Length: 137
Image 1 (cartoon, rainbow, N blue to C red):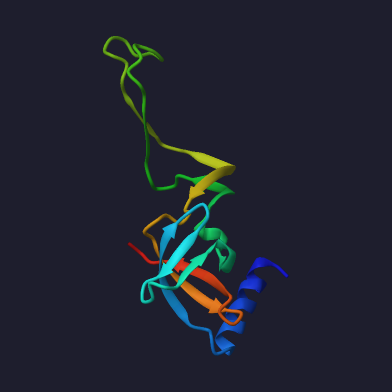
Image 2: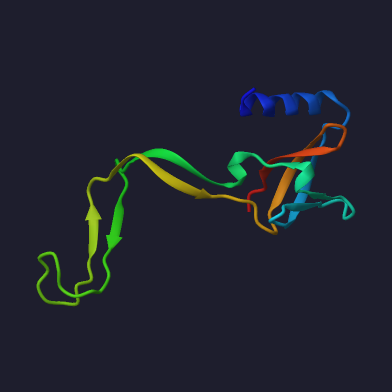
């Protein structure tokens, strides 16, 4: 079973059962993760009962990027004359007309932080909670 199928089985199981409710919670700890329901101060869940999806973590992935119609600027350091520049302090801005990155690797820093508000889907008779997403700030 792949990740998408397992998420779908969690959602189906939760929505077909009586405990398939969505709960709003606040992240009160990370490393290990801990959240507290916003409408029930006594409901505090730790990492053992939480399922965190990939998109709410720091992760590295491959990508291809092409500049197309946008702009990309690069400012150089003040390290003296170089690269055909005569005089001045050497500081300048390069405006790139093209920029392509094929099959490059990027790191996305999207892990949950203390203070984030998240939505939880309760399942498995309230023993597990799947974090659906964080609330937009």
